[in-house]
Every structure is written in structure tokens, then in C-alpha cells.
Length: 381
Ligand code: C2E
Ligand code: CA
Ligand code: CA
Image (cartoon, rainbow, N blue to C red):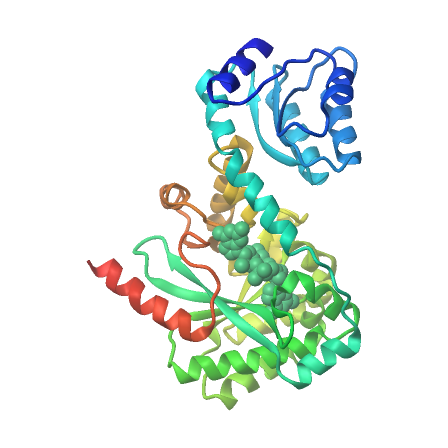
């Protein structure tokens, strides 16, 4: 097998070297190699130990795992590598064909440039409570909108609102950089309400009929005044169709709080708001919880959607989520749709709607309106 790997790699212009022992690889080359095709079964150190070792070295090597053991072991090893933030390209079950390895190796450039791009944003700066408070006062938090299309006829049915910090010096800051701090300092509610107010004004201005999905923290569902407050924002902007508002909460955040929020969730549904479970598949909701809570939509986590064509387990999760949701009378949105082929695959699986870079990236409201106009023209051709 080592010979086959080397042949394929050599033919593609890589310089390849085969080692039987992990220790040889580490002492000889560890750092300077670009790609490691790692067999989980090795004589001295097994593949799992090797993954830990690479993680300890904070290795940036692109990793392909191969194994003759059963598929679920290979899959767990892959998950372990993900957890350790290793740059894993894929897995191959032995025996595999040369073209399967070739496909994986040919994708490597793209992956490493994504890593480089990721690094560039890594210049951490600390955010204090007063930084966030000033930003609230100066209305620096704005919403970007990412379209969702119905997979039946590709019409635009809604937009997810995603928060951005328009920082006067640092430019546009993505939510993962400031939302955890906003939660820690207890400012997230205020920021969220400010955002909703802007969004309602945008919907009124453009007289939009589409839904808008709002990201909520689980804590907000404990506030008994929530339904009235949401309704209040809508009516202030004469945008009062509650059914146009989809409240998203992540599966993991919600499940801890579910029993305490159940009354509020029910009241929100009674008033017509839609409720959506975000990042579905990454939390631990039980069938009973799903059955009890009045959710109208599941959003399949993007990690499964992105991997669904390369990874049978991910595809199974996508498929069963679609079936589960439909059996419970819920709609399903697939997030993280990055290719036409995944989009087509989701259509075949009967998924209701999709959101992702292949359709459009999140954008400011004016761009989103222009995009929708262009999309309609493109669709009617
Ligand atoms: P999320 O709610 O799961 O939002 C989806 C994220 O995936 C967005 O990142 C979106 O830009 C990104 N995305 C969409 N399509 C694709 C794709 O095809 N490929 C890839 N690689 N990514 C895609 P973003 O905007 O950076 O938001 C990150 C997270 O921040 C959100 O994840 C959400 O949990 C949180 N967030 C955003 N806005 C708010 C907000 O107003 N309130 C709260 N509490 N959280 C928010
Ligand atoms: Ca979301
Ligand atoms: Ca999500």
C-alpha cells in the first residue's frame, strides 16, 4: 500500500517518502512535509497516538487517514483529528483505487490556502465591556443577510440575519470574535434587540414578504416578555406579520434550558412566530424533547452538509435529519451549501430549503436586495 501511495503521489509531481515506523517519520521529516497519508495500523505507534502527537506539535500538515479496519474506526479517527484542529483532508478505506487518492491529493492546495486565510484573521485583540458598550451606543452592530432558497422552485423564501461589528478602526468584525464576550458581559440581549429594530425597519423599507431568521441566545427564551417585545418591534415598524419571523436557537444551547422555556416557546408559536433549531446534529436533543418542543424548522449543521458527498456517515445524518424533521412536521434547511452538486443532492433528498456560499454570502441589506433582483432574472431565463 505504501508503494501505491508513493506511485500516485510521484506521478502527480509530489516528492513522496514511505515510512513503516512513525518514529522514523517524526525524526526525519515531521515539520517540512506538506501531506501525511497515515495508516492507522502501524507497528510501533498506532494512528490515534500519531494524531495526538501531531496535535501536540501543532502540526499544519495535511492529513489523509487510511485503514483496513472497519469504517466506523476510520471515522472516529477522523473526528479525533478534527477535534485536535488538524488539517484533515479525508479518509480512505483499504483497498482503495489510485484515482481516489489522486482526487484527495489534488484538493490539497485549496485546503491549505483556506488555512492561510484563516490565520490572517487570527490577530486577536481583547474586547472589554466598555468597548462593546460604546459600540452599542454608536450603533456599530449591523446585520448582514444571507438568502435562503426553496429547493422546489429556487425562489428566495427568506434571509438569515447575521450580526457584524462595523468597527471604526478595525473594519468588519465577524460574530464569533465578539458574541462570546457580549454574552459574558451580559450585553448580548441589548445588542440583539438593537439589531432587530434595524431589521424591522429594513423589512418595512423594502416591503419584504420573505421571512427573516434571527439568532437568539437560549437565555432570551426565559424572558416572559419576549413575545410582546418582538411583537412591539414589529408593530412599531408596521411590520406585524409574526409568521415572517423565525427565531433560531442552537440545539446545544437550548436543550439545557428547554423545560424552563417551554411555556414561552409555546406562546411564541401561538402568536405565529416560527421556531428553528440551529446547528442540528451537534447537540444532544432526545426524540422526546423534539416531540415536546413546538419547533417548526430544523437547520442541519453545516459540518454535515459540507461533508455529505465525501463522507457516508455525514450523508446518513443529513438524510435521517430530513426524514426525522418531515415525520415531525418540521421544515428542514441545509446550511453551508458550497457547491452545485451538494445543492442537487439535497433536492433529491427532499430537503426544503438551502443556504450557503454557493447561493450567496451574507451581505448588507442593499446588496441583498440587488442580489435578489438578479437572482430572479437569472431564474426566469
Ligand atoms: P450560524 O447561526 O450557524 O450562522 C451560519 C454561519 O455560517 C454564518 O457565519 C455564515 O456566514 C456561515 N455560512 C453560511 N453559509 C456558509 C457556507 O456555505 N460555507 C461556510 N463555510 N460558512 C457559511 P457568521 O455570520 O460568521 O456567524 C457565525 C455565528 O455567529 C452564527 O452561526 C451564530 O451562531 C452567531 N451569530 C451571528 N449573528 C448573531 C446574532 O445576531 N446573535 C447571536 N446570538 N448569534 C449570532
Ligand atoms: Ca443561525
Ligand atoms: Ca447554523
